[in-house]
Length: 353
Image (cartoon, rainbow, N blue to C red; front, side, top):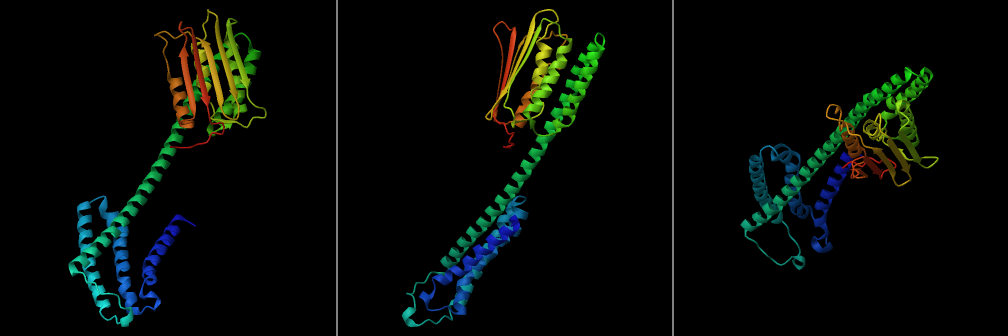
């Protein structure tokens, strides 16, 4: 059942109850004549008319744009309807001729107070109609806002991922170029590895999530390619501890910028250096820890400084809102830089706020 049809059914049920309910309390089970039913139906009919004038016309067209005319039109309609209802009930009540033994005790109110009572009831009906219509409009606006936000988020994610590709490719090609000059056979092997990595970047990177085993294989290939032109005084270690078989899902390329950053700022051409990477996961969380020697770039070589880390931060916020921790620190001597990301969503559930 669609939403519109359900709304129609709810409206019909409510007004059916409104029109039938007086019959439950009339005449103490002695039957109801047509005139008595018309007398009792006047008030529900007036409420219905005022409700739908506000629900279908006044609130959608005037409330948001011109409230002065909304209140003026409502006042004229409600006062006119209140007076008309009083005369309707007076006319339909006069011909009623009940047996003396079931006539209720007489109680007469001044016409002014009767009209005032009718107006008060009609004001409530108008207020309910306006509230319902505004709530529906707000819900529609909220749904549209969430859809727009979701589309914007996906577009931003695609943009961030596309920014990763050239950066990663440039680093890898530089390594292969350096390898060609002294070991062409290894360069050919490296190109084959690069083709596999590009396939992952071009195709799997377009998905919302990938299996963690695929991501680990990609990171392993990347690290092996980066090690090609490193000297022997650089200690590079990758420790992986994930379930086998692995059913854990992860956003693709979420850690690559961190690893690129470690190779960029953690390796010296002359001094002993190290990069230690640990990736572990279970059914509750994914942990990526990176410790590397710290050799900050000088002021003459600051190209792209911090952009990779900014991309990581933004992607974590978009892919894992409220479900991650990221700690970064440098030791007291500023010789070791450590970064640790803990992700608490191993199924990549997109719960948008």
